[in-house]
Length: 442
Image 1: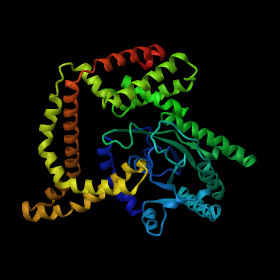
Image 2: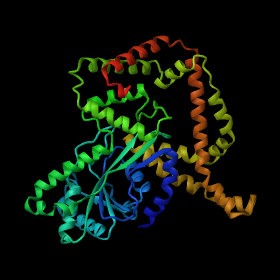
Image 3: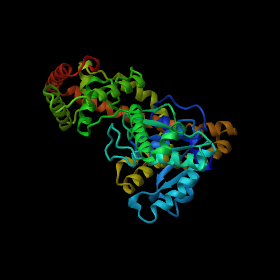
Image 4: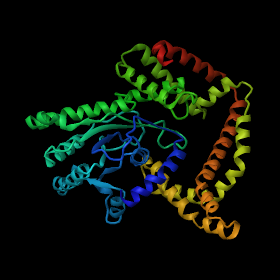
């Protein structure tokens, strides 16, 4: 395990748990080694490798697009166990360079370590719950390794699914699901007879395995409808509108089953579904235009007197710790936020880069505190280091304080606003939705 990979492996879970407090693993491997090629979806750019590598036991080497390997970044990426993969658009000697990388992959798998490959190849700019077509590279690497090793070692392949409620939203959810492993050695006879056929068939098999680990809405145009149903029922993976009394696993399964049911339907041809889809789109566009939120409308329905005691109590409890959070975290937060949002045009990169740079900035800028506490406050290294390690939680307290303050203000506004027309429209929409979809999704 290389140095920076090791440091990230032990430190990232702390930051990821702050980012995604409801983080769960499904069928996660228990061993560090395994000669396995893990093929993952790529829903959230840099966040995916951070989450998959840091929150699971297997030690992995990442297959990463070659254009990020510059003379400056190459030593750092090497220390993070990243390997370049050259694509057709990279030009140059793509085939020759990839062959050299594949030989490195062979050595990695030979000695029991694992590869992590993002089978889709790229991330959409807008987060969407579906799997794009999977490329053949993972299966090719597996069989190339077996041929180099004379089929004397078992090489496996498995699918990984990263399921976010919203990857770029602080305090949202993440469930990482892993399939059972498939041994590529079992296909030796078929591969030697017809390599291309076996590679194509196994790629399709892996694609299906990956779909089973995530929510896969087959038609891209049906994805907003799927999301809107989850918002209204509060049983799925929507970040803002979910019933937190339900376990993350149940909400994930609901999201999957709803998508699988939608995949069997032609929404545009089904008169009831098409009407509900259009009605839901109209409702959410309407409340957005009036700067309302579905969760706040539901709050007004359930709290006609508009009680906001929860927010008040939370702010009172958080205030002393939040002050410490502002002192220690405000400057690093502002600097990182401005740098990332100016440097990276694609928002899909923001959350992951802010997570890493924020962790580094907080750690470095606050490091002198250890000596300040020891020499000027209390001469105990244990207390000094313990306080230093709590700084991330102080920052979280400040964030939650601001979040509750915003909710307090929003609920105060909606408390004074007549939203009866929106409530009536919502009730009609839910009634029509229940008439159009099976009862298990109500």
